[in-house]
Length: 150
Image (tube, rainbow, N blue to C red; front, side, top):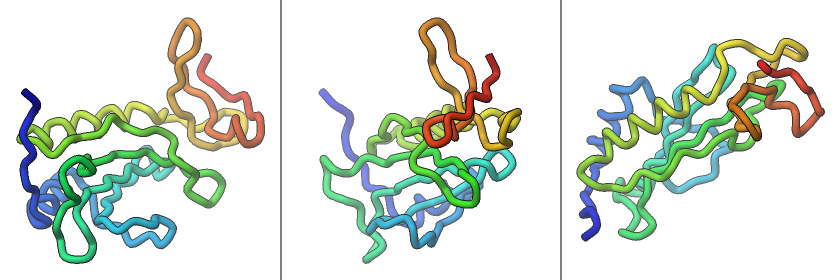
């Protein structure tokens, strides 16, 4: 039998988010009808976003089945936030949601290297190669920068 859905109030989510140093964001580039929380990481080179499932139009959550909390990591590219650099496994609204979301936050923090790219100065994120994990420049797909920790 699967885990049971639990209701998470707006106040409860706010309290949890603040305890983890997340604040509500009003970034106009994030088009969503749910409350989104933001926390900057790694010297401002990355930010974690929590899509709470709680509506901006009255505080209720989405209906069961479309109610998973999502955590994504965005990295700074030049002067703009890039697309999603990494998505965590969804967090279902069950009694263990706090512990599960905290675990995803830890995973996200590990995705961004503490050092910047030695070639261009942008953030570096964890990648998985054929034989190992390494950090490489987030600009690789856009400019071909080959900065890495290999």
